[in-house]
Image (cartoon, rainbow, N blue to C red; front, side):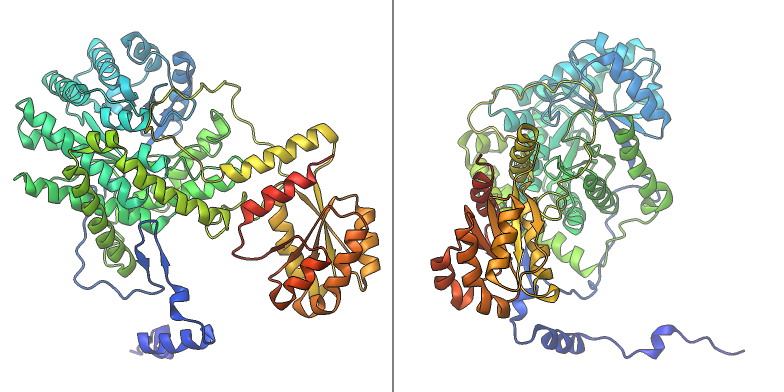
Length: 613
């Protein structure tokens, strides 16, 4: 019988030496470090990793068990929320993620009255309580809301032990979000957990929630450390009630955000579970599988080109599933615009359905095990998070660290560094800072008014969105359009042939339209007078010269002078000026746009000129 050869037999074997030789050739003398990058925690990311040796799978769920695909229940009116919830459950959701108005993850919407059992009567009408998974997010009202939900479940005649419910009591997360500490809050939460357990509920009861930290700009290690610190604080409080440590460990769940940093998201969940086992071992308790709820990150959501949010949440959902999450809530792609309508909610549900039922992600236990990149990042994140966790413990625990402002300061430092990268587009936000579509059709949300953010004390970790600074510029441009009937515009004075200017004209168009400034592209001017006339005819107030370095050497200086004489209020040039900088500035060029410049500062200055009437 003839043997069948593998396709790989026709190729030379790959090894690091030959790869490095190919890289050196491609870099053309540039340093190898150019291929390295760093995470927000300063952890190095190599361009290539070998397979991890002796890797062991660390599954987060039972073999071949899917994660629970949850859907937010957050309409302020309980009756309306019930109708939406029934539709979500009929459409494939495995459970409800109930969000109260005061929850840190409410983001402007949430159900009113969760401290009243009557609210749950309405909200959960016709819901089979023992057939779904329920999560509760009530913020500072967590204890009262948990009691109300428990009362409703018992009154419904459903056996508490048969209901899969995470009560989500998290006073430390509420403190982080509000900046206000209640000295007895953790003890009250522990007492509530004891009462719920005594009433037959299995839990988990307390949530060590990293979402307020992530939403405020925390790094991966900072979020893990905060979750660990909260969990250990709750362990101590539960132990103080007399609860056995084995039961206390099972009474706590972890909650984290997952964003579009796919591999870091996978590594974050794996590192968190690993450190939890370390905590259990330190407590003398047999390690148990940590319940980890995940939610796609608020801070990555955009209002502009919100369709891209579908990609972001899909990547995040993939990371959660592969990382071993117990449950997942996908924010609707219109979340930053308002309360999601039926279509946006269906897309959120179907995102998980595709990952579960078509991609079958859950059928492999810890599929990232053995990946050199993921294993390395898991190790490094675990080490960085453990070090910060120890600092928090040394400061007296999470509540004390928050009260001192030390943790907030660390998060602010990370956020400021990220903000600088966003301003320079080193961190690109597709559809917002990169590849904007100024003619995008509006996307609708439900006509429900968002409530104002609650009053917060000093040190509160307020949620942010990474794209908000660019969206503010777009909002100003849209206001100008609404008032004047036209957009602020820039004339791209293209010099020379198409081959000379196309690359930089394309770059400049993308650059300016991130601020809602419409780019009017010239047809290619062979001389300065032609460029100046085309600018004058365009009606724009600002101008950007676009061409190759060779054409700039011959024509940029005279073109700048001519355009200035034609009335340009601001002139820029696409590309680095090099040795021509002094001469170009003397000719009237006010600024230069290039990869690595501070895009946000440049656009803020230029837009102010373009908006002048």
